[in-house]
Image (cartoon, rainbow, N blue to C red; front, side):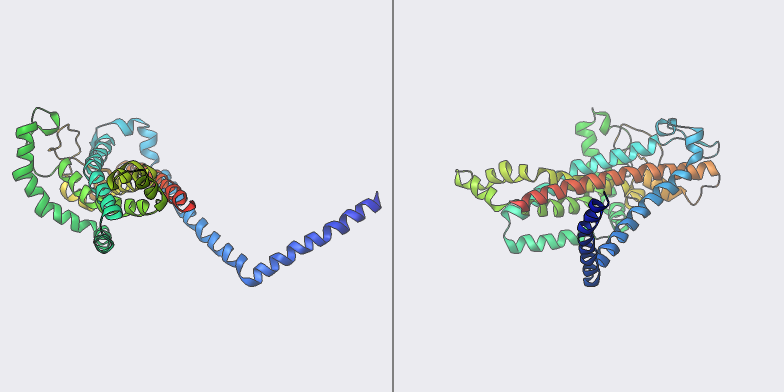
Length: 329
């Protein structure tokens, strides 16, 4: 028995020493150090995210205990009597984001297809640079654009036209103020178009050239090749850009606050003023005096934060999947 054990130990010792020497060599060359440092950075970002969720959760205990799930479906928002419900703000956030996507997705995807497939390289590069500049414009500038251009245009021309021709629909009924769901959705659409266009263009460019050439070789036109081959191949990445734009629209604060009207109500009319989660937090957080009032606003922030994180994660995975598939061939 002892002879067998000694043989195993002697046989295993060189392997262990070999691994140690390899580790020391990688450590001296900097590989392990770099790996450890970058791992710490990645874990640090994850830790910050977990801490944010934890802090929001523990500081929203009162509305969870007092209202429970009813907090998410109640329309009441009365700080005087401490009756709080998130439904008007959730409704406003979803409606404005939906309007923004309905307008921005066709414009962004259509522009991306043109820049990636049809435009000459000089024009494509120049317009892409302009689009990326638009994505970097501060949101308050878009809010000013909404106040001085979008709202007067809607109030004087667009809203009366829609009410005259589509007034039989509940969406286009009621008094016209200029501010409201439609104005906020339009401003959000202007803000998120650059995100959709820029990311979708990169995803389309990642589609292998062989896919286009194979379609053209069997007699397809340039448009048929793009619409029937390139776009379906890049569908997941385009969807990812839409998710990223949706996350931006859900969390937008200043521009929406300046044009939505800031009224906690639920209305079927797009002309009516409303409120969003980010807008109510920005407007009322510094004025919240009671603990229940303050923690109700924090609970709104927690719901918005979790939703935004989920959407961004899904979008990143979709984009990486499409780009990786395109570069693997």
